[in-house]
Length: 153
Image (cartoon, rainbow, N blue to C red; front, side, top):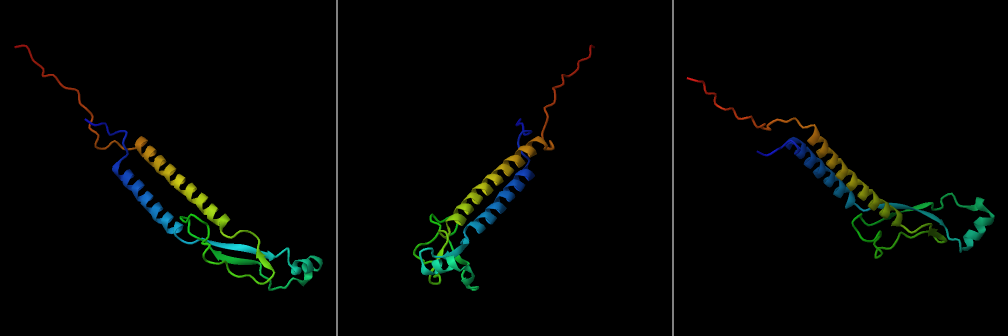
């Protein structure tokens, strides 16, 4: 006789499997998408325009670039950005304030790791709770053997 009291029930295992499958669909659907990065743009500190604006900031044009959208690689790519594709061109005397794609790519990798660990913890918790509070349907308890009673004749 197999003691099934410490095994999770079939409905619980089906639900846990469905949860894992759904999370995998969502995770891979998100992870294969390219990451977008909005990179701040600033005046090149070595340019003549930087010297002029340092002395007279009110001359900064209203339509001056403030940020540039850059498309980065997906989460599964080894490098944050495809260096074969050039960055969008900026107006003269403007440069990117930081290296594009590095921060969002590493942030997405960290988020992916946290999501996977959270799902694993939820499944482990689900299974352990279902083991403790499972209704014991279908578990056959051994019955004590009864000795035939003999009556004195």
